[in-house]
Amino acid sequence: MDATTDAAVDAETDTAMDATTDAAVDAETGPAQTDPAAETVLDLDGIAKTYSAESAVQDLSMSVVDGEILALLGPSGCGKTTTLRLIAGLERTDAGTIDLDGRTLADPASGVFVPPEEHNIGLVFQDFALFPHLTAAENVAFGLSDRPESERDERVAELLDLVGLTDHADHYPEELSGGQKQRIALARSLAPEPDVLLLDEPLSNLDIRLRVSMREEIRDIIKATGVTAVWVTHDQEEALSVADRVGVMNDGRLQQIGSPESIFERPASRFVATFLGQASFLSARVAGDSLVTDLGRIDADRCAGLDAPEGSTVDVLVRPDDLRAAPTDGAGDGRIVRRQYQGPAFVYRVELSDGNTVHCLHNHTENFEVGEPVTVEIAADHSLSWYPSE
View 1: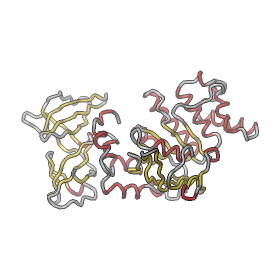
View 2: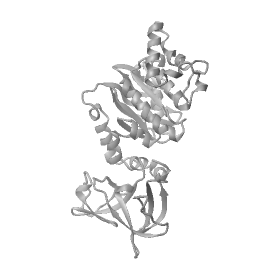
View 3: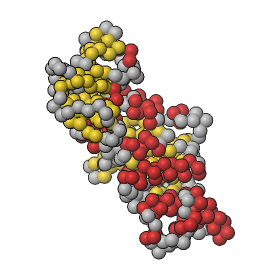
View 4: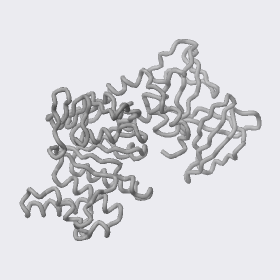
């Protein structure tokens, strides 16, 4: 998802979660959303952290099961990195408990706080944090000093092979590319066989082209080892592509957690809807078994869980691929006010006659000019999310 989310994210950031959000968090937090037989490795229950008068994390609860990758996603300052630091023991919680593999790491109410060096947790930082005076192999071996030399060498060789850098074992960090440094940092974090691997914006220091290939490589490596991982990112596309489940955070709270498909297709709040890509909202009036919009009628049964009373208005979420624009000789439904070329496709912003704007996704061969009048139809063939009108 790119900057074309426009001001919608900023406009919706302060929007309170509607009544469906708490249910969505509760329903999708637990292990049942992944493998029902998987054991919980990491459990956070009501954790909170405040700096001075500012609340960084508020009443956050979630579980991570064995072998899954959970992505914590949200804008800068939402509390996701603070949550990671609390798990790692780099910060103390003000409230709530953190349990790792059945062992309580933090519980302020009982005076429990296990220092980070006593956690069996691996950390991958965005700046790689490699030791410049050590070779790649020596960096990987850094956390294995308590093992016999033969066992240590075998583990280092295994991990260098896993990350595809056996031929770079004797290279120093300055001799490695950004992607190679990140793979060495990952191997070093995996070397002690941690219970949980924490990744803090691991791709943010790489160029855009490299990020796509590296996120696939890192996911494959994590899955090959079977380690449980929490991956923090502000990049929506990254989170949706690497994670088994995604937790969306804002203002220190967990807004929704679930599979990538569920949070994108059934966002529990306007904030989640707008943060996960371009989102427009059609005002609709409930009329019997239909919703009446300026772009036509929508069958009410296509809006999951619709329980708004007759005659009331709701807002229906539509994304660019849910709408189609067509040329018109008349006034139409609106006019093209912007077009964004994406290579295979155009995304057109259409200002409707009522002053609202929507986005329409078209093949690159379907060309409209800015200022051109168009009609817009609802082309979605799937369930649509709805929210009470503001």
